[in-house]
Length: 176
Image (cartoon, rainbow, N blue to C red; front, side, top):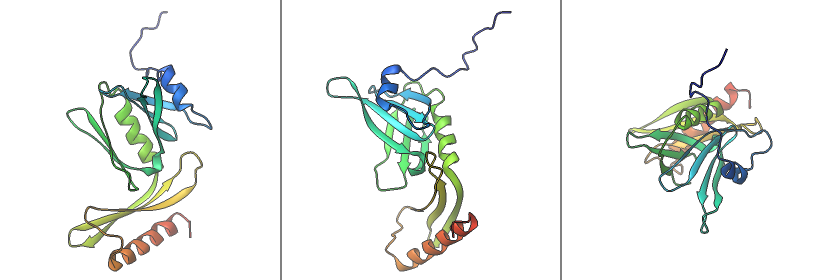
C-alpha cells in the first residue's frame, strides 16, 4: 500500500534559520513564516524568535523572547501579524507572505503559558488584568499586571486594586 502526501505535515524550519536560532535545552521549533522583507518568525516550544537578514545578507537573530512576555497577537485580513508584549517593548508587526500554521501556533503557545487570568474593572472605563503565567522553559510560575490603555500604575487606587488582584490570583494557584 502506498501512502499519499496530504500536505498536512508542517515543513521544517529552513536550516539556515534553525542554525541561527540554535534551539537548545528542550526548545523545539514548531512553526515558521517569512515576511515581505525576508525575515522569518519562528514559534518554538519555549520562545518566539525573529531571524532577519543582516547587513551582509546573512541571517541574524533579531529577537528571541519567552512566551510569557507575549501579551497578545492579532492577525489582520491584510496578512499583518502584530505581537504585543507585557513589558514596555514596542509591538512587533510583520506582513507574512505565507503564514502556514504560525498564527495558530502563536495562539497555542501564548495560551499554554497562561495559568490563570482575572480582568479588573478600574472604573471610568479603565481596565487591567492580573495573570499567572508559566515560563515554558523552566516551568516557574510568575505573576503579571497588564494595564489597559490610559491606565497609570502610579495612581494609588489603581496600585491598590492591582495589589489585591495579584494577591488573589497568587493565592488561587498556591503561590502565597
